Image (cartoon, rainbow, N blue to C red; front, top):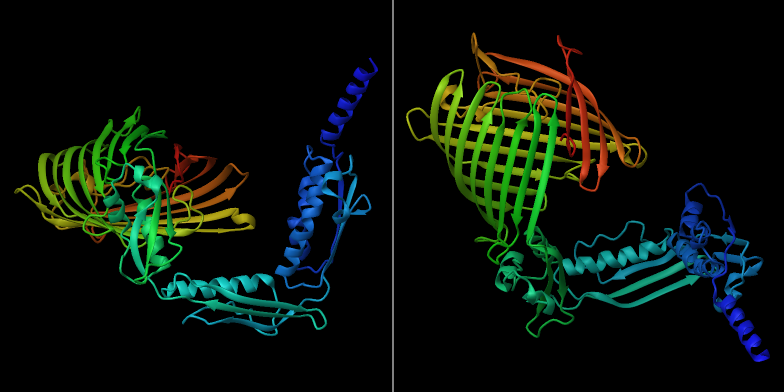
Length: 602
């Protein structure tokens, strides 16, 4: 009986020893010199004790571990700023944290006192990295007599190695380093010796073992990557090869791994480790406008149709549901894209479109079939050019007619936005030129040009405020209005041009009761966006547009404008947009239009 009681008591004691001790909201007192340069804030941010004590579930063991790790974390901040003679004291309930055995943490911790003395800053007595590759850009502050910030040594070393790698020396490394802090005169001696290694060429592109199970054929992976085998090694070209594989859309992840050792012939093999993306994808969208009604859209995408990263996308759209701006519109489209055709940065595309538009001033049904090539010039710049046949059946104030054209569309897009759905900085410029040839006597020859330019700039604490501007320009030169497909002419009004004005309400009146699209268009939009909370943004905007009768904006023409306010609610798929707008001018305040969609207006 006594043995049984003793066993229960021992078990209870063991459980109490193993159970985590509660912290009881320990207080952390931090003492450091105030210099007005943000240094104390950086020290506080580095302290794990402060963040751990703020957690309700933190135990005494957690607090002790955080306090002991703070020695290294705070020393790192001191060294980074050039203070190598600093002193750090961390006391846990009066006892130096470093002297407390980790496995003998107290059951309770009430107070942690952290004191940092940084003392005099050190300066470089020697600041040297050698040898240097041509055009190496060292940090200007990395020089004798300047503050010996530890970060500068690392930055100088990394930039020197990067310069050697850019010169083809892929295996450049640090051969020797001597760093001595002289506390007597507060100086730091930093001497870094590099071994550039031999200049290398790109070798073979190999596939990692797990990558051989990819649904994309190995030869197509190599074609898409476009690794320049035989050319001098370049980190930039290696990054471009990885970017091409990612851009194909067939892979969820791409990693390029350099071989540990070069080959005897001076080449360096690269191993690609790729993980396939899901081959199929579905997407849906919806927009609602008080006048234009509901627009529903969707697509189905296959990312690897024939095992060569070919993409097939099927699109469907129906608009004008329940609207008061004509009838319902529809669109069915298919597009096939094959990357790396003739060149790693050149792709082939084929397309087919069936579309019907029932607009306020015309109805049009069209069929278009064509193809062409895309070209990626850089991460921000891409172009596209092709040829297509188009049949149009049009009914407007000029009467019923059928047109046939051969189109030669070409476009150039320069996109430097930081976010396509919610840009806060950068710019976007797209220019499209479409020469066309009539294939019968009713259809004319000419060219259509359209340009869309957008710019974004943010300011305020945390870039809270954003100014967004947009300019649109269009022109159609050549034939008479009746010889041009109706949707290649220009109208203004609605969500894409001037909010607050009725959809496509501004055209050109060429005779009493006869309104057609213009051959010139100019539109300007401006938005002021202010972040209210992490998820909500308020917007004020103004739009204006002009439609002219002739290609250069001469002849008949008119302007109209609108303005309003809106809100954005940010979600993982992009901001949900709600805008309320009214016309400006004679109709100011008479009508209100509401627009709802996903993504910013532009």
